[in-house]
Length: 554
Image (tube, rainbow, N blue to C red):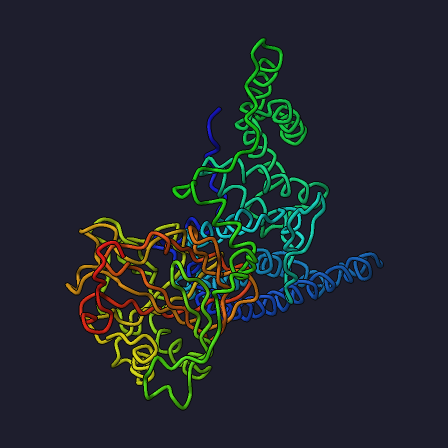
């Protein structure tokens, strides 16, 4: 059976460029103002069309009145030259002007022109696909029930019943066309695990409902995709049933007729197509996927970890005079690896200033495929990249945008650097640390399990020529309603987002070797707009501040 070739995404005809809107919630928020402009343009179009139709109604009423009144009267009426003249004139020119009026096309063209003016700011095909993948990622990581998502609920099946894991303050239900789009994205990736679930909902919602002109898909389209998806998962009998339903709507579809014959043969053969059932697609991090997802779901509530009596909270000064009068509230989250949360590290106004500095350039879509780690991105949020050999490249396992801010970008950045230095006792001046990286996560934004320190001699981390990343200091610039925890996979605990707090950990042992227990991940943001700022501190410059151990094994 050939894969369907019809293009359903209307935005596929747009100018081809890299889509980035879905990688940052800030971009999504900015899209609201674009749609407001389109709404205004559509309102203008409707008003003009209303006036045009009013003119047509007036003409219709005038002519109808003549035929129900004057022309049904005495025959002498037609002997009146004025009556005869107006009839001839109307048939010769007035009807012509109404029928061939260019007003409708002019109104439509004005609407199209207004749309084209906004086209550069509209989502691209990659944005649409990325947003759909984000929903499927949330479905998987948080074990969400698709049927509930379609109703605007975030529920997980617990003890055989759907239970709310979070009740958002604002939500919307999805339409059959919405579900079709998500299912089709999965279908085109040959991900039938997800396509079956989303297309099932699409078919259910499309049945018995009139098609809307704004829709891309139809009931027939959804049935076609769903039938093939079930066939690929081994459910031949259901694929046959769906194909037969499709033939009721499109009885002359030769391809579906052939499929029906094929499915019937398979069902009566001695060795029918084996049923594999629904199996999730594989992952590069399959070995740690279960732990990762469990930590994301528990969102920092791991009693076996946090009930450790050796963990503690205190007012911390680090022996620095600058902290004596106002110690920082320290919460030790883990001893191995050593992970600490510093509460109220940054003020709300400072967090907003950092986000504002990073705003300019966020809408830029011309992200290079390979961008060096420390190029001067001051004040420019761009698609986040990850190490790929000696280069950096975008990747599906990191969905966010980031900007590198120099101290000169804003006075607050220098203040934060000084505060980090007081708390950690480390030298955070460039090049002994990297510029402050500000990150805004997108739809289902996440960062799959990874190390912050370099694990290869060719890593771009060494471009500064100041050694490896010895420590990470991450500042939470915002809160989120649900999701977005930082999960430490091998240490088996996760730290939820705490607004205005900062989390710190050592990436390297004292002997300079990487600490494998620091394998961590940014869980997908379920609800909310997650902003963080990262400060990565390097080995060089710390020789007398964080001394090596005399024990080579430490």
